[in-house]
Image (cartoon, rainbow over all chains, first blue to last red; front, side):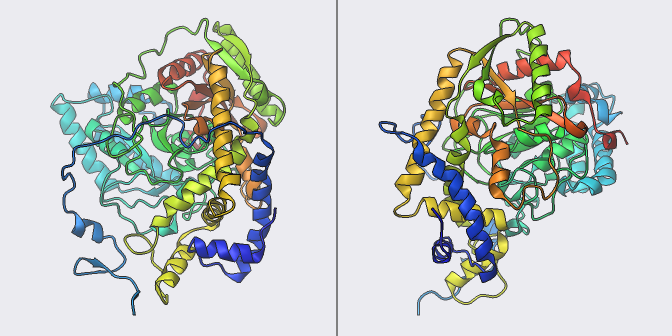
Length: 95
Length: 488
């Protein structure tokens, strides 16, 4: 199965990736190869086989419901692109 | 001290017997990096002042008689491990300005052991690549031939160890990223059982597959480093709580009666003749050591590459959604509204391979395709795990090539992503099953380039894998061969 330019633009929008028009045709070609590779899975008979999300059967651990994190806001915000008075700045979202 | 011919254990004894100080040893490695790494590009960051101050602290600790096996040893870290106060880029423009505010669990463990941070090694961007050509910081060159790739994604770690610019280096392996570059650079590398090394502070690519490990010249060196690196950590929800184990304990025990499983599928074409010859010769060494050959079958192993290229991109598209230009990392200089900021930031911050995998992951997870791709891949993943379970009922260790070819040239596979993906055909299934795997040098193929023998073990059999690798290395000297540039 092949992806159209429209499909690729829609995927890029979902993934929040700006695509330049010049990138589209190369991507379409590479995707044809990648889909050809992963489409091999369609031929495998997996009736009755449960999906496996993880190699080891691990149980989720529980911990005491106590505060363990300390306040490190200033430290973490020191590497942020834009902050002011302890807040992360982004373009206006609500008019 | 001749750093090109000294093992980690020998370095450790020299330090403990005070024949050399950690400062002297570290200066010697820094001098080698300064002199040789211009040709290789194995390091992204070196910070001699920081490293030497750690060396002084280690020397003081040794003087107080409080040294452990790695105290005073400089270790290079793949730039995927968050390291407080150090630039931690993951090979990406997205993180090219990210000075980590905290340490990965692995970095904490080495600090507690008194090991030093020698520098941060180059890698494929976000660990996505098999040749180190996707790094934002430029490709790493193979020390055996500067026109060849070192493999990837841990190409910087493998090249640094091969050129003896570091006695050992940390690395990570999601689909072969420790074993394939170790093979292509002629060094030893181990990916432990999934869950043994904490993923806390190890920048995520595909979380159900990512696992930290080590690259070093020999199996013995791997065991020494692994002893410090492995450990339970509550901050990683898949970390395994097991009693500590000495991975060097079984080294030197005889290999008589070791049952070596040879998967039919790993020996039936798809391997270049020079690699096949070297692997056959390695198996003959094991024959002489008293091991037994057992034919096994991994009938679904051919499907491991397509399964991986559904599951890993799916997990990556989710993991990499965190790079939004808000909390850390790159942000586009110019943008309109919030969406435009995200889209431009991510378009500028990610390279072509990372974008391809994010888009692939977005596709296989999208409505209408989820069952056909994602769930189907998970079902085939179970078949692959079942194959290994059956094989390990009949053998102790599985062997075969780590890579179908020796190191290839720059640009040879970059135009066709699928060709690049297929260079991990022998390593990927091990990640899908969560098993431990290692690669050791097993001679040379075409153009004098190294060949790697892969050993795959059952869950938590690292000690036995290292014993099997060490036995081979006691009978051969491939792991002591160094490229000409390392002798300079």
